Amino acid sequence: MKRLAITICLVGLVTYGWAAAPAVPAPPLASLLPSEFSGWTAKGEMQKSSDAAVADPANAEALKEYGFRDFASATYLRDDGRTLTLRAARFADASGAYGAFTFYKTPVMLNEKIGDQGASLNQRVLFYRGNVLVDAVFDKLSAMSAAELRDVAAQLPQAVGAANNLPALPTYLPKLKYIKNTAKYVMGPSALQHVGAPLPAARVDFAAGAEVVLAKYESNAGEADLMLISYPTPQIAAEKLKGLDQIRAQIEQKSGDQAIVDIAPFFAKRTGPVVAIAAGPLSQGEAKTLLNAVNYEAQVTWNENTFLGPKDNVGSLLVNVFILCGILMALTLVAGVAFGGVRIVIQRLFPGRVFDRPEQVEFISLHLGGDGQEPPIRP
Image (spheres, helix red, strand yellow):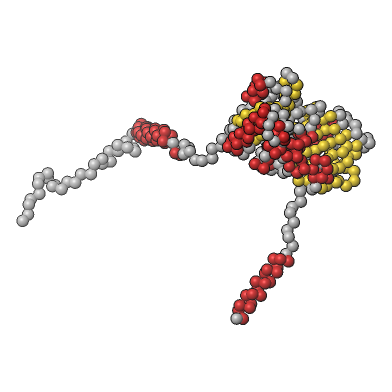
């Protein structure tokens, strides 16, 4: 009984110790913006927050869909009196930063070689590097402004591993008749609503793991929309395409749910796990040409042993056997020539002194009979 009481007390003390132990705080994220760069120095304290509403109150939900993590903002000064405001948002991976970049980029912007990708309009420069998006606003531009922002990009904290991978879906957009700076990569319903997609979010079904890229293309009657929806598997994409075909039939018949009837006419096709939708002022021929330019190419990674390596290849084994036999024959020949040659050379230099000496007996003879007769047989 006494032993049981002691055991209960020890268990209670250990449990209390675990409960009273302070929780280990998560490691802090690396600072987003540098305190100084290229002659610019931060003025005052940087604004930091992990709330997407602080970064952009109007588009907070869209930022969350892109995987928003934290935000930093600072004003910088130079000795000549110029000012610069930097706003940086960090996302879970490079796909989120790229998606947010396309979300804020406008067609009138000029492309810039800053970070992984950049765009500018007057005093504003937007760029991303890795999983960080930066919005820079100068009060006055100079010839070195782009180089100064490249210095900022070089000092941004970087994600590691797969978090640096960009989405593959935008690479399936056709280049012919593409209107520059119109591609939008979308990861949720809120962002889709803001970019003006041909289909509503309810028909895309982001809950099924969908991701979307949209772009505008030139047509004979105006600008057309191309929308690519990627699903986790081709089977899911095939089911979604069936639903879209039913919607198209209801739109053509002007019957059914009013929300469906209000959707503009569109054309659709599936390639692998990607559903392509063309909408806008397109003829049937133009829509077919645009959709046929979208072709999914599967990238297969073989990670099982094929047993065709050098150690398991019979042909390589036979070749190595012949090589080994050749090497042994060559060594035997060299050894024989060397042995005979050394004997001949020594005989030439020292005749009768090393080999073939007169006193050297080549054979051991046993003279058992003495006189060469057979020994007598004794009883």
